[in-house]
Length: 352
Ligand code: SAM
Ligand code: SF4
Image 1 (cartoon, helix red, strand yellow):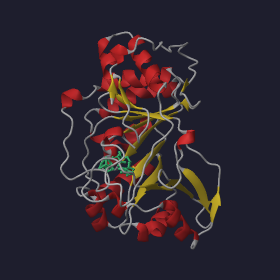
Image 2 (tube, rainbow, N blue to C red):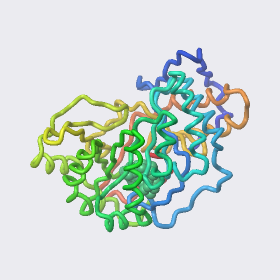
Image 3 (cartoon, helix red, strand yellow):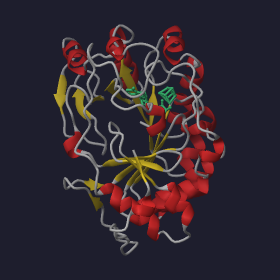
Image 4 (tube, rainbow, N blue to C red):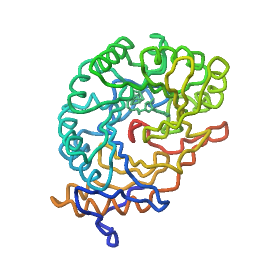
């Protein structure tokens, strides 16, 4: 459901002194300090858990321009956002995307932003890694679900494994810390968990496993993809010593240190262990729609106030009103009796 910001008579702008931005606080007392921005819904892959093979993408004129995205991010930074993740779809396939990174890097330089980062499938990294590092990007997440090129082709449908490997090489060469994100897929990559871990840690990269979430219709049943991470963790624990650690990156992952490799291993468990109580995030799509929760339909249109006025007042009012109705959490269910996704939009719309 998309609320029309022109109806927001009661919402007061929350603009404050620009340099000492206090975070926006939601109804459950959670400070909103982390914004994820999906800069395109398009992608050069068609991962089986993320998209169906035939996707309808947004017409280009629906998209916010890069300048508008910059203005929107800047407004959030002015309201206390300290961490910005650029995502998609595949963010690096958006034409001219580096101009957005270049523009946003001014907030790192001014100290108003702690971190500018990216989630990518890695296909374009060989081309952009150096430029990202030059913009102050220090850490990136690369999604990779297998080390087997044939399996990779089956999972991503359109992806080229060698390009992703070249991308990871380039990122490390450019000095970027790489974290590998792996969606755990039942019967597909569960047999590779140990190999993926040894490979990632052997290259000095953290690895995080993610439970598949019921977002959007895909070709096939979610229940056939879903592997609870409690099971995967128990299997890994038979081979390795997993020591609990306090390490946090501002996201939902919980980490352990693997004693044998010395590396960090993360678990993102939206199904088996809900982490909503500490949620500090909101997400904006490439059309300027603000989702206060990845797993709920409620949304606010920020494009209208953004385009409707040169002043940020209406935009800030719409942001404040939206945060005031951030829900407590998601209600993901994957089982044989639940046929429909929790929300109709794909992960590529809201961004991971
Ligand atoms: N294209 C980029 C990538 O793949 O890294 C960024 C966008 S992608 C939507 C962000 C993350 O979401 C990826 O790590 C991907 O594996 C994950 N993802 C996509 N669909 C998912 C789903 N249904 N459940 C869990 N994770 C999902
Ligand atoms: Fe594209 Fe990322 Fe979705 Fe795969 S997970 S289809 S790479 S957006």
